Image 1 (cartoon, rainbow, N blue to C red):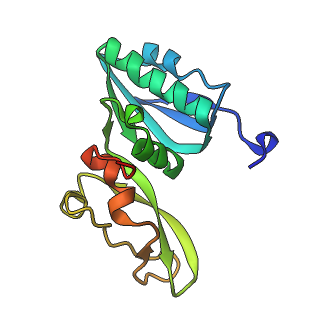
Image 2: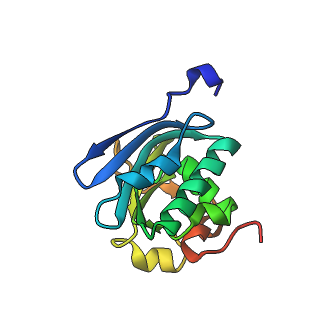
Length: 165
């Protein structure tokens, strides 16, 4: 994606959480979000994050470190796939965050469409503990879909392991 096509990073407060959107890159000052914590907690909805580059990963790690230093509990909701890949590759990107839900791609072989599906960790605890993708149905035709990635690699962030180790 060319830099000019990236949506700039922004955030808004929605009730008990912040909704982050756009690109996490050299313009995102994520560490400043620690000041938005309420009662020692900061919940982030990350479903609108569309891109992250190496400088963005640095800023993400700074957010994790700043939250830990301030003793802020970070809850990550609706984590976008681009961030899941970073959580898997860069252990410091996980910090002490708690992921409650995340997106993963599934393919409907009948429709030949790929769909990002939201996986709730509590609802799918049994499958995820076995590093297996939860079953998902195509939103168009309702047939069973296939998980797009190697599950043991995609879900490694849940166990604190890295696919590179």
